[in-house]
View 1 (tube, helix red, strand yellow):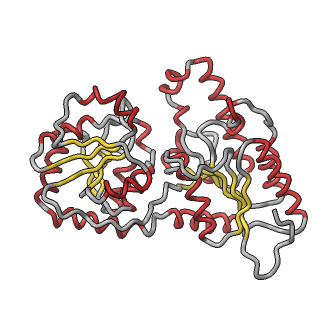
View 2: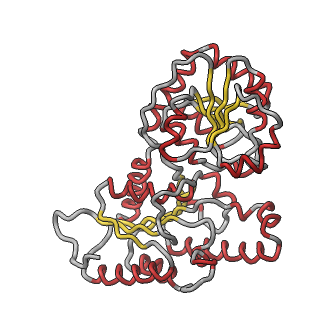
View 3: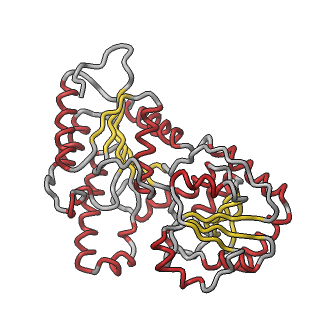
Amino acid sequence: MNGNPQHAGARPGMVFYAPYPIQENGTSGSAIRPRQMLRAFHELGYEVVEVTGDSAQRLRRTRQLRERLATGWRPAFAYCENASIPALLTDPRHLPRRPWADREFFRLLRTARIPSGYFYRDCYWVFPRYLEAVGRGVGTLMRALYRSELRFLARHLQRIYLPSMKMARYLPQLPEKACRALPPGAPEVEVALPETPGLTVLYVGGIGEYYDIGEFLRAVQATDGVRAIVCTREKDWRDNSWRYGPLEPEKVRVVHASGEELKALYAQADACSLLMGSDVYRDFAAPVKLFEYIGYGRPVLASEGTHAAEVVASLGAGLSLPNRAVDISRALERLHDDRAARNSLAEAARRARSDNTWLARAAYVARDLAGEGEK
């Protein structure tokens, strides 16, 4: 790391923190987001100083950062991505090898008065299902660690970013005035709408008890001229296909694709689906796939009562529907018969994506934290 002080004409600097190595090829939302945000800060022209990796790497990089700050270099802000477990447990086998590493980093930010923001991914641990999944003993201990981490972050950071502001109501440890919404970003991918007859709806994501797309599939099979492409992990389909009974192969095609392979699927899709069973978590969740759909310029069909449906409605980029096969079937029939209407929804999605890219998200963070630095 260059230890020279910042000088006139130098690129502005920022610090990027994550309690794990950044994955270059990860396909889950938790892997995509930090990678895309890191790239976006580079694209904005920042000199990015990373404090990432395992606890040993983070500790070493924190101490290098302290040395550099001592030379007079000052970053404009620090941006942090969290893990789905407390940072204390992100080392291999979840053993806290250097439990002081992250506290040393955040105290350095506070002492140096560097405006700092932290993206807090989710709060699944708040809900009863978490205790059912991990057991009451482990769950009680983990909840104590999550709450302790939140209290520490609230003391040391000026801003906490959440997928949506609705999530703040489940995290009383965070002062709401410090919270801001920072949903996922959209890619900007030009893929022409298909000109083939009929209507094809694409679903990309998990399936199973939590991701129950049964009503959507029943609606597709009941509606003339409509087809579905379901893109999910092979293991997910193997473990959960029994939930959906026999599927007509000419109506529902199941594929296992990722990365660049998805582009060919979007080229076949007239619209995309986030239609699935209700859950309190969906009241505030902002799925990465929602913004991916928008980035590809595809109208989104989302379940009524979810945060995703509210986003779609606010953008005019799709339809909010009850998650009942009969209602979904009626909407699919209307879209099938009215190409102009679905083209209009697709155009709204294309217009929306420039304000919702990863670059736009990073630029928002930079402006927001710069404002904190001026106080």
